Length: 249
Image (cartoon, rainbow, N blue to C red; front, side, top):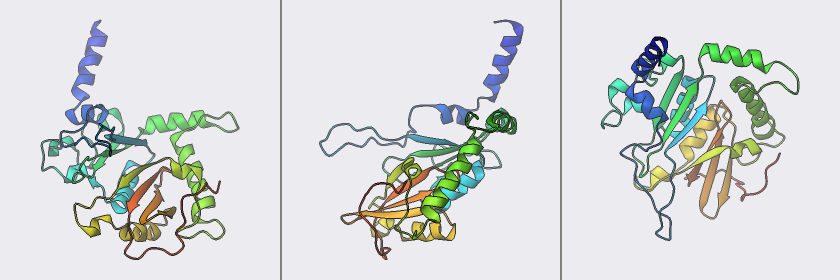
């Protein structure tokens, strides 16, 4: 490499804080525990789930409120998440050097803790996306344009459709979700979905509830569009929860 490339590489290396490297790493955190399926064979488990968003702080707050996920900057009891990994915004240290806002959350008490990431592109990148998006059928798809599309779809078919309530309304975008099965290790209360449903109602978050046997499935859409599915039970189940069926649209 020439002097210019050497200087660029040195600058990039200095910016690559340990937390930033961890964000991109494929290996799970040390606290991750392998699970096995019912047949005793090794089973794949999620490690990190990452979303692009136009507002990382907004979506991080949604994950705290609805999903009871914990921002890793507030859980520094283990060596996996030292306080130095985060800046004063709660974003991953080093991410601002790249012009992005990257938030990381997790459920560290779970048997197989999963990290949930929200990454907000830089202002320059979002401006470029807006310029490329343009108008018409051949316009490029930007993060902002997808969020607008998803929000309208959820509003029309989940939150505001004719007859929609806690147990009706659905669309195919609600299937762009990850699922979290609430565990029993914390007692019966750790499996209940009542608080999550009440918070979804309070936040006007598009949501719906399905049922299969004794288990309930609460789907809630994030402000950015993608949804999460929580599996558990209700102390006070919403009336009329239906079995799994096809999407409304």
